[in-house]
Image 1 (tube, rainbow, N blue to C red):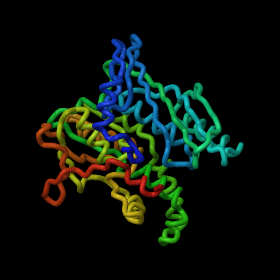
Image 2: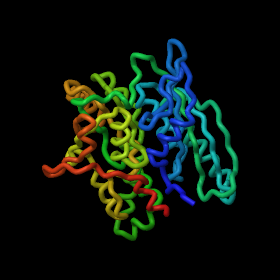
Image 3: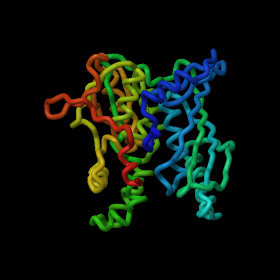
Image 4: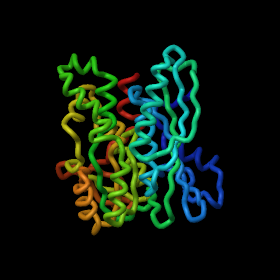
Length: 337
C-alpha cells in the first residue's frame, strides 16, 4: 500500500485533491490553492482571512508556536490577525495538569503580544500520541485594496527575504536535541541562545509584513514553514506561474543556524523557517522596503529576481545556475525518525 512520508502532502497530489474537492462560493475570494497562505471570504466592507496550521515538530512552548505560525499566514495576506481558536491534543500517558496549563499559558502570552483574542477551541486527552499537538485556527481581516496574494508576482519583480534561513529550526533543534548537541561540544550558553531564536529574532513575521506593505509596492508575500525557504520559494512561484533566479550568496543564514544544521547534516534551505518572510515587490520599491525594514530593526536581503515561467526556479552560485533544491519532506523530520 502506498503511503506518504511525514510532512506536507506532495504538491501535485495536494493540487489534485483541492481541484477535485474544493467547494466554490461567490464570497470565497481566495479558495484553497497550493502556495496561498490563507482563505479569503468577502464580508462586505471587510475581508475575513482564515487559516489553520498545526504544530507538530516542537513540544516546548508549543502554544507560542501555534499563535505565531498562524498569525504569520494571516499577515502574509496583508491582513491583521484578530481571533484565535485551538484544538489541543494531550498524550494520554503525559497529560498532567502542569502540561495543560503550560500550553494554555503560552497561547495566552503570545496572543497578548499580538493583541489577538483567544475566542474558543477544544482540548482533550488522546490515545496514540507521543507528544502534545496544537492545531490553531486564526481569523484576521483586511480590505480589498490591502489584500496581498502569493499569486501576484510578475517577471522583473524583486524577491526579498527577512531575517534568514532556519530560524524556527534553530530553536527546535536546540530545544529538542540539547543533550546530543552538548555531546557535540556545544556549550549550554550557546544552546540557550539558539533556543531563544523562538523569541529573538523570533518566529513572527507580522511586523515584517506590516512594514513592507507600508513602505513600497508589494506584489506577493509568503511565509516559509515546512520545507524551508526553498519550498516557500517553490510555492510562491507556483502560485504566480512564474520563474525566479535566486542568488545563493545573498541568502542570509545565522552562523548558529549553520552550525546546528551541520551537526545533523541538514540543508538549511530545507528546514522549517517560520520567522522569515518572502516578499515580492516592484523593482523600484525594493530599496525603500529594505530601508524601512532596517529602520524597524528587521534584517532583510534582496535574494533574487522574478523571471518568466520558462526560466524555472534556479539558484545562482559562483556564477553557475542550477535548479533550486527541492525538499518533499522537511529536513528536520530526520531528527525525529
